[in-house]
Image (cartoon, rainbow, N blue to C red; front, side, top):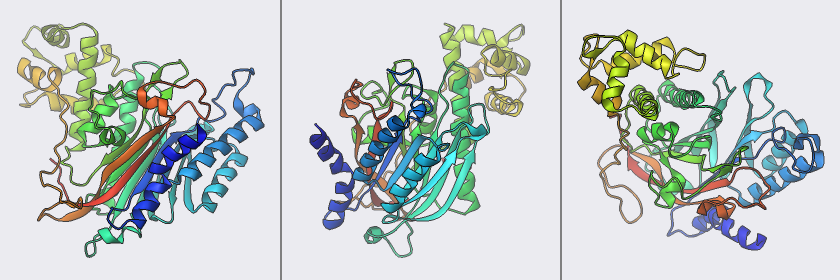
Length: 445
């Protein structure tokens, strides 16, 4: 079993890179792995009335095995969540073994001394680190993210076109677990903050569109608002792209068995290519919140007419007032508490809903902005690719990625099952193979 498993992983890990470098007929590849490694401070031992952090032999051995697999697979990018930053011995073990294997490492603790955090490692054979940023949300969940700006180096020089640089923005994060429905908005806020940081960084450094890779444990499935929000911004799930799954194929794979015993797919490597037409971020955010608003209305079994009446409240006119809108948001638990929408965000939503700007929202505006809110997939550039995967276009060129392969380990999760004998973590490990291709730059839609 172990031999078979290693062989399968190697085909998309170090083998995929080394073989593509040797074979000049293929495009060179990079690989990216994301893995929530389950911090020992959270892992309960089934036969002991304690956490794994209390038993050095247990957490030390398990993390040595995790490192064995990571170094065997030798991905170009490694993004870990629930990294036990509070234990110096474990931190030293990861940093030494990864550094000895040629990786540049960046770690980040969650705020308020939670004990765990993130580790991002990139291999020096494939990347030059341009810049690094810590993103501290300072929110209810003490969540954080890492932003890494890198440039690809040889063997990717064959993809260069004059002074065309091959740069990537990499994000590693771990969003809040949705313990109750009110926290879904917190997770949406966290993703919005990440994209705001990325957008600000691009503007600050005057970056042209470059690929963005978002890695991590998103604590939400393909049915959730975070997923839809990222899709509305042009991001694609690399695993689903590799397996030609649609947004509706949420049941076909899982990546996590949570503390409630439920299995779900929450670990993603998102890719945004620079040839994607993107909506303005604030517009996508408003659409996401209105989508959540509508979901809550429908969950209350309200029809379209009932929902409009609910928003009208005690108003006698055939329209919604701002006070009625605010009251409805509070009744739906979207405002009125520390995790809810801020006053400025509520006002922004109202401006979006009041299309003609006359101070009220009539039935037509309600239909267009709230009830019939749709999540539209972003269009790809219409130019075709040639036989070598390079896009034929007279537009300004840049470097993007095609998804060549993706695999989840253990293999049972790819069939929607969770193996009982899996003990490395309560998450599956996801690795994706990318191949760089030339493509035209896009614009905001």
